[in-house]
Amino acid sequence: MKKVILCLIPLLVIGMMAGCVNSNSSTGATEKSSGSGAQAETTSSSKPIVLKIFHAGSLSVPFEEYEKMYEKEHPNVDVQREAAGSVACVRKIIDLNKTADVLASADYSLIPNMMVPKYADWYLMIARNELVIAYTNKSKYHNEINSTNWYNILNKSDVKFGFSNPNEDPCGYRSQMVIQLAEMYYNNPNIYDDLVLKNSNFKVKEENGTYNIIIPKEPNVNTDKIFLRSKETDLLGPLEAGAFDYLIIYKSVANQHHLKYVELPKEINLGHYKYADNYKKVKVITGDGKIKTGKPIVYGITVPKNAKHPKEAIEFVKTILEHPEVFENAGQPVIKPAVGFGNVPDELKGLVKIENK
Image (cartoon, rainbow, N blue to C red; front, side, top):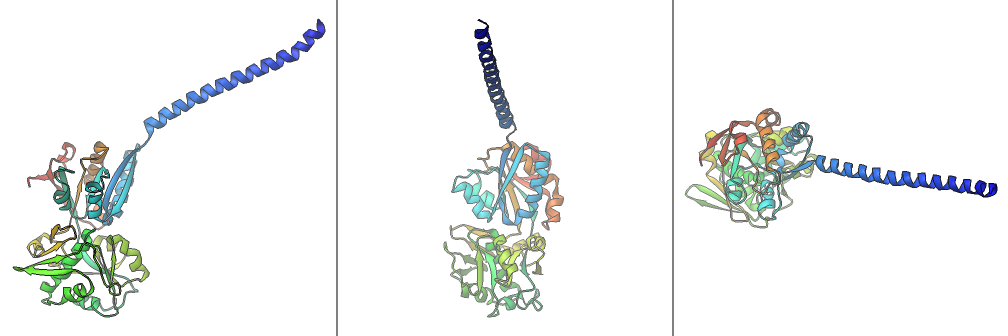
């Protein structure tokens, strides 16, 4: 009997140990499951809201700063930005059915012309800009170019200049306006012909003192003379690398990238309300048949109707309005106060001037 008992003791000990192990395993599994559940619950409840923003390429610098500022105040929000030509940004929403919480365009008029009323019912005019001729120390004749001879320099046979696609980017169609306006300002009817018409499939028709520049659906350019890309920021790297000599671009972008540039006369640089009547003498008809009339460069912003997080999106816009110094530091003068159109959210009304238009 003693032997049996002695034999059973190891078995009992093993059984107890196994029981402990099983008990611990079971408990551990339960805790893990419970912990996993709690973790899942915590993760689920604290999973950041993804705030999707489509914006013009020329807004990349200030919007990067606004993103940091906003996320610091809203740790539960992950701001994700997509920079592209403004027309392309809008088309993502209206043609490709993509969703965005905020849409910011380098041409405010794209919002009322392409998005209202189906895709947006309000928008703000928030900041200004102007066009310049940017260059580097690698650019041919960079020691000679100035505000009175820039078009002659660009027309030299060994000089190559660039602009963005007029069908996709406001900077692209604005560059056409500037070159055409230059003909009137400098009293030289050959500037646009020499620089653009002879080197592309673009066309111009003059009607009662207004010049209509027609851009085909598929723009073709003489690549030995013109460097063309989708949006203006796509041209910066090649310019700095010496792939071409001069770039028609926003003054703010030139400053942000420490480029040298020629300032253009106020009568043609699209940066001043005083000359609005002069700017509208040029129109660009893009490949989709839309007419863009020359006007002072003004950035616009809205929260599209398909925004997944409209509350957070409105707060992002509010952050922009409450911190104009970010735009100013980026070289884009703000409109004080911002001008609002349509069904402007109540949260923003105290920060904007509402216009009925």
